[in-house]
Image (cartoon, rainbow, N blue to C red; front, top):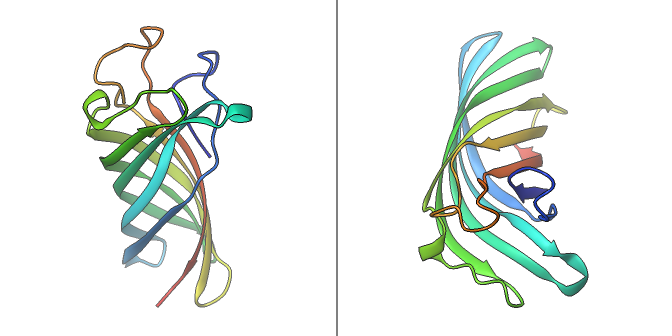
Amino acid sequence: VATLGKTGLGLLPRVSYHLGGTAEFITTPFFSIQTELVYSLQGAAYDRSQDIYLNYHYINLPVFAKAYFYEDASFELGIQYGRLLKAIGTNYINSSEDQVNKNDFAVVFGLAYKVAEKVNFGIRYNLGITNTADRDIIYEARHTNRVLQISVGYIF
């Protein structure tokens, strides 16, 4: 579930997907460092009934610390760099790569749980700190990525 900026700007959340891989480096039984490479569809909706969306395609590289607090449950906290691959506006919304900042930085935090030996579940929030607009053109406000991600993964 993704949106841009604060509430009250007329932008609505949109539901999309993300897909990627991860590597976890366990340092102690209670702490690890994890990095990922994730393709993520982000952006916002202007009007769902008329199918008007801002579609931002990112390749994200989060790096975070994981603190295990109960058996296989962990808290995650870190930073994320995102690179815009494509920006598309639908139905009269103009959005192209030259209007959107190519680099995106975010603070990442969430919870993860290994449900079984090979399956994990996670919920994470990406709080963007970079203005996605190349300049403040809509309401002269900052439009930062705000993304709630729910993940299911298989451990190889």
